Figure (cartoon, rainbow, N blue to C red):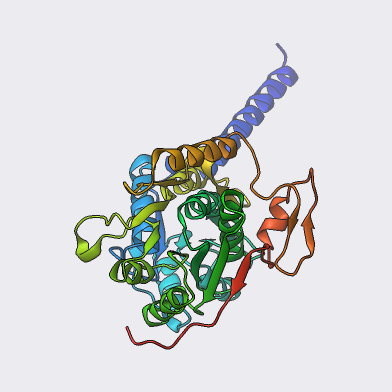
Amino acid sequence: MNRTERVLIAAALLLFLGIFGLLLSLYRVDDKAASAEQPSVGVVLHGGIDDAGWNRQHYVGIQKAADITGIKVYIVDGVTLNTSKGLEALRQLSQQGRDFVIASSASFDNEAHKMWEEGFHTYFAIPKLEEQAEGCVPYLLRLYQAEYLAGILAGLQTSSHRIGYVAPMPKPEICRSINAFAIGAREANPQAEICAVFVGAWDDPRQEWNAAARLRDLGVDILNSHQDGMTVQRYADAHGMEYISYLEPYLPNGKRRSERSLATVLCHWDAVYETMFKDYLRGKLQKRYWMGMDVDAVDLGEFSPRVNAGVQAAIHRAKARIKGGSSIFSGEIRDNQGRLRCREGENLSDAALIHMDWYVEGVRFYEAAVVAP
């Protein structure tokens, strides 16, 4: 072997080692689990970890997913919405080195945008599917699927044919849930009417109580809600009305579930958080996380003894259709102004659902009464 050949072989070996080293370094950057003893994420909750409903269920889901994936979670809770506290909490977690932060309310979208403007390149998971600021990862559960089943239950259970729904504000997430609930109710009972009241906030106990009182005055005999807390359920139970529990069973006085709670719209946030955390560890977050009954992320359960076997069977059949790929928003659908929104043989796309801003036939809105709790 002459000198020229030895030089060429040495150069080839150095090139091979260089490429191998580069690939190894890229792998380690991509796989965060390989470059940290215990990877971590930050979490901002707008309520306390023990607040029944939205906040507690997020906390439970995050902890389950963290245990499975080995991620360390740093939580800042009790963060008031629409104040400087949201921005302070996001800054605090980012300055501590958390490059991925979960914010449990869509209302933190603006704060996340300000963080990127300030040069914090932290990624934020925000439960809002519409277009968001740079650095935001949209996520949500397909709660409307469980609301559809709740609508079937309410439609079969009502005797007045008037069903009440207390909602925070006219947003696509709320619109989907009200519409799915109404579709289910009217499939089960064509005479059913959904009487709805907006209270203007995710968590306003006084206004929610007033809204429930207004709906009771209108003659509804079953109450449902899409609020973070349990005020509507508390009102219904105190006034002898049947109701749907939301996110977790309502326990009067913290004891046992009332038979007036016909069923519970259940969410399993660990399903989405486990997937999200695993993707984060790989360095490959998806553009959107939106999970439903196909992965058991949502359900309707905890049935009251008042719900007979025939009604439960009808709900289970509908659930099987959804898990089999059937769309709730399919076939001819008209809005409450009579306009055709979906034709026979068609399904509304995810894009149409994400931006939904109209209400189906059978939904009517009312103003809340002013009643002291």
